[in-house]
Structure formats: C-alpha cells, structure tokens
Length: 153
Ligand code: UDP
Ligand code: MG
Image 1 (cartoon, rainbow, N blue to C red):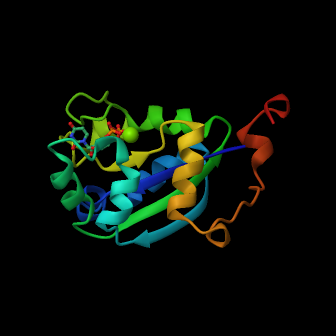
Image 2 (cartoon, rainbow, N blue to C red; image 1 turned 45 degrees about the horizontal axis):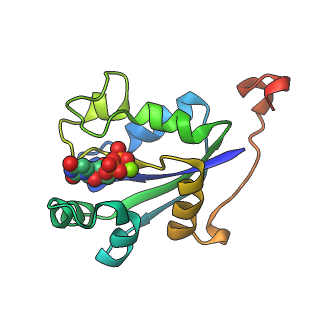
C-alpha cells in the first residue's frame, strides 16, 4: 500500500485543529502509521521546500512553519497520496473547495493548515526526511476487510 507524508502546520496547531484533521483522516479509513511532534528549522525547510527557496515569500513561509512545533504523520492506504491531496484541496484556502481541509478550515494561501506529499516519489523522499525507519509502525488494521473489497487488496 502507498504511504504519504502529512505535516499539520503551525496554523493547524495554533488554531486547535489537530483533532479535527486527525478525525477526518480516520473517518476516511486511512491508517496512521507514524505520528510525532517536531520543531522545524530553516535547514529542513530549505530541503522540504527546495522548489520555493528563490520565491520572495520563502522567508515568510519559513517563519510561518517555525512559529510553533508541527505534527508530522505518515499515512497508509490504497492510492493514499492522491486521496489525501484531494482531501487537502488547493493551495490557497480561499480558493479551495468546501469539503476539503483547506476549503473548510483556512483563509490563507500560506497558513493553510496541512502539507501533503504531491506524488508517490516525493512521498518516499519526504517520509525519509522527517521519519527514522523505527518511527514508522507499518501495522495492518484489523478492519481491513471492511475498508476495502477483496479484489482491491
Ligand atoms: N506558499 C506561499 N505562497 C505561495 C505559494 C505557496 O506561502 O504563493 C506556501 C504554502 O504554505 C504552500 C507551500 O508554500 O502550502 C508549498 O507550496 P506548494 O506550491 O508546494 O503548495 P502545496 O503543495 O502545499 O499545495
Ligand atoms: Mg507542494
């Protein structure tokens, strides 16, 4: 099964939305196989947002990501990278569709609650960046037969 990296950003932590986001993940039938709090620093953010380091908003983005500790998670499920990106919604919360995390919980294009890996390849790199192998608990939930049909597994 696929895995994806999620970061509950300082905008999520500070606004008391950690539980709401985790509820949505669990209600969907996605399995959480890693979860921890971390204080990010500029070094890890320069790697994580390497596609954005030259942008004028990068210093502000870094500051916003270091404002409080974050919660990092590894999620598991069939097609979970795409499923969770769809649940996350467009980057700008003001344009994100209602029903998505960003569409329902934020008004910002920067303080937008969650990070979600955007491809299977980047998920692998990002999980290795934020988690040691022994921090991931790749267990199989007991209710798997009720989450998926046999021919999907
Ligand atoms: N971001 C920003 N200003 C922008 C575009 C992006 O502050 O104009 C921030 C925002 O927090 C976003 C993050 O940079 O979530 C990463 O940008 P990306 O384009 O990868 O969007 P995402 O994959 O998070 O939707
Ligand atoms: Mg991105």
